[in-house]
Amino acid sequence: MSRQSTGPGQPLRLSQPSSPPPLIDVVTGRRRWLLQNGSSFPSIALACMLNASADEAQSNSNQSVGLHHPARVQRVIQLFMTGGASPMDTFDYKPALERLHGQSIGPEQKPEGFTAPAGAVMKSPFSFAQHGETGRWVSSLFPYFAKVIDQPAFLMAMSAATNVHGPATYLMNTGFMIPGFPCFGAWVSYALGELTHNLPTFVALPDPRGLPYNQKGNFSAGFLPSRHQGTVLNGTGLAALPDLFPDPRYGFAAGQADLQTRQLLNRLNRRHAQTRAYDSQLEARIAASELAAAMQLAAPEAFDLSQESESTHQSYGTDQEATRDFGQRCLLARRLIERGTRFVQVWSGPQGATNNWDNHGSIPNELPPMARSVDQPMAALLTDLDQRGLLDDTLLIWSTEFGRTPFAQGGEGRDHNGGSFVTWLAGAGVKQGHNFGQSDELGYKTAEGETRCYDLHATVLHLLGINHTQLTVRSGGIDRRLTDVHGRVIQEILNG
Image (cartoon, rainbow, N blue to C red):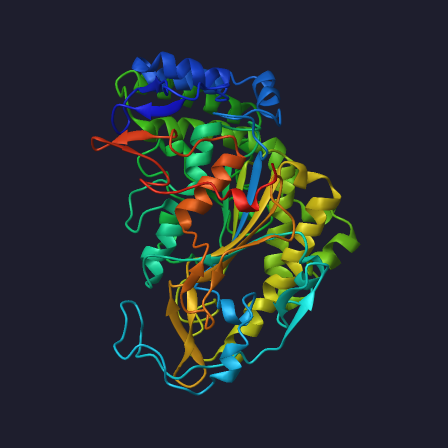
């Protein structure tokens, strides 16, 4: 069964595929009713949001529920390395680079997206060793992650259609290289709805040093209802969500006065909704105010990392300057999905030329601090999810927008390269320790088993119980979907 609409902000309709028949539409009872009675969408949505039931949230938490088939995954945490993580210096060991080091065998003309002509072949300045029962080659930059290397499945031949940060980052998040399209988390929120009414369904945790390329466009709902956009938390404590509580200086705004204010706003919103039949921004504002009211009870506990044990903090590296920030955000991501948030993105690095994975100047100097900042936290997150049983229905993804060249730039840097890069997945439904795809001997282009963002998205949606070809919304006269007109489920890395 497809999720479709007749146009941006238009009433939704159901379309039945000819084959196979749908198993179950897991959109909540409220959302299903809205689909069938979409003519007065905003006012109906308001009434339903104000009366969301605990039974609804409970029914959504059933692990077997999916939109088109039984789901293996209910929650997703995505770790995104902004700037283009170098595969041949992290997880794609290329001994040929040592043999060919210093030889000028790259393209003579500067390819699109390169910031400079290709230099000579440059070997990795870091040693590689085999780890785990699978004997996977891992760079010395990841000593902690090497200890859990048997758990993820690796896509070793990912490729991107561009070597430019902005379009490539959009591509990995929305399936398109231009703005205006819903991001991955928004599609998931739209298709499956909430697991709890006390916390946001889709949360983005950007690097505190700045937003990634495309800024908040990476968290946008695009032409989907605005309420499905990501909730951006700038930090880990209650300060991450400003204005959740009245300012202590204005005590009169709390208690009964706060309740009366919300009741008045609800009446005004309801009246306003009757004159704005298809205003999804109004729906989003109504939903946000109700969520904020619910979060006044849930957020203080969910965001309070001090409730975690000292050993947990040590495992995530929150007691060390190099790993504190990413470790805290990984820990918060675990706490959020544990309490019902469905999709969490944790970003490493802001846009720009420094403090990210865009290592043009010096791979030996710029890459180690980035790797160190995420190595221990992401290994701890994977272990923590496993030990708590959360991997039974949670998927952890490590991704970046593209790779880097095997050719030197400016002596010891590496340029942009969409030809080949690495992504890994771990958790529910994924084969542990499995590899799929392979790059060429330099790591410059894919050689076999090429996968693209569309295939990654199709695979994750499949694990969430969604047929990516049937999750569509009509926009501008076209039935749009996350995977555009592409994508296949990468069965090679899936169990069963």
